[in-house]
Length: 198
Picture 1: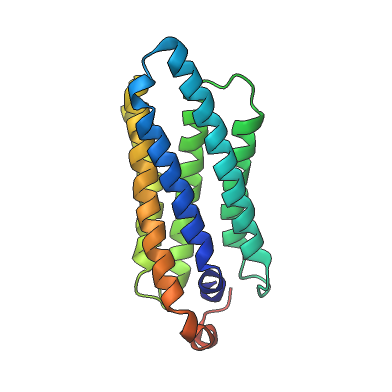
Picture 2 (picture 1 turned 90 degrees about the horizontal axis):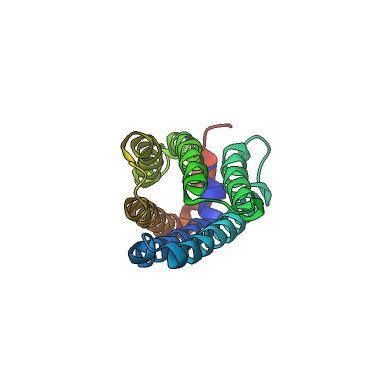
């Protein structure tokens, strides 16, 4: 698992860039959320952007998981990418999706991805000291999903704020981990020898 992540460090960097772009979009559309006509246009854009970004990020993750990977060491990363890709396809294909429906997709996706990221972090914890970044991102995803379900009152501006804050935090964690993995490229062979099976 650790060799897959190191060799594909750019994947996490790409996902961080996508998450940051989504965060900027969500924050920029906050002021239009309460306007009926502009709000509908903003909502349509948010759905399309989320769908496209999630779809591309999911495809890249699945490709990285299976490309030049040893058997039985790629399935967690593949599931992570599959979940992201599925959320993107669902958002793009659904017609006349409301903000509430999009939020339900993102919340469900965040909780599932959070558990997968925690599992991945626990698998690589012996090899890199910064796996806490991935663990933190996973816990934040779970916390965001559960917290949003409990706290959201249905107000649109608050929804954009929640989505933007979550995406920005996730982008920060992923970017930090990507840079750390990139710095470990020279020791990838040594890490591969000490990696646990599975």
